[in-house]
Length: 151
Image (tube, rainbow, N blue to C red; front, side, top):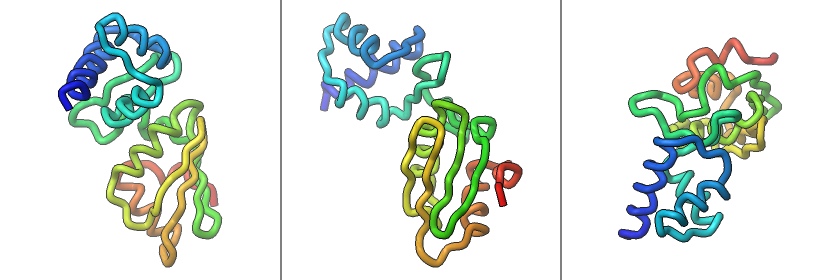
């Protein structure tokens, strides 16, 4: 447990102090501080710490006191379209994983789960919920979502 806490502390320090653009680069910086880790462990650490990769800016720490994860904001959303119990959310390139994580970590009863690509999030809706109910739930975390609806 102490190794995990130490690794997380060092990760936050590194990302908070300098631009890092790849996991390989991050692994090397950790190694220089005496911390050896696998890519899989590093990916889990980044997810646990809610660190996201912002295109052109590198890895970013979550902003304290904000509604959105670093890299996921209303401006990163392009469109939202429904088809039955599925919805497709388009984002700017590189923002879909952060947006999906934001949705998955917010209590939203209509949404069973998400699957993210680079610029697309697939939302799987629970049976019996309408697109209107889903938009209302999403509006709590993405206030201007109605302006992005494709009907």
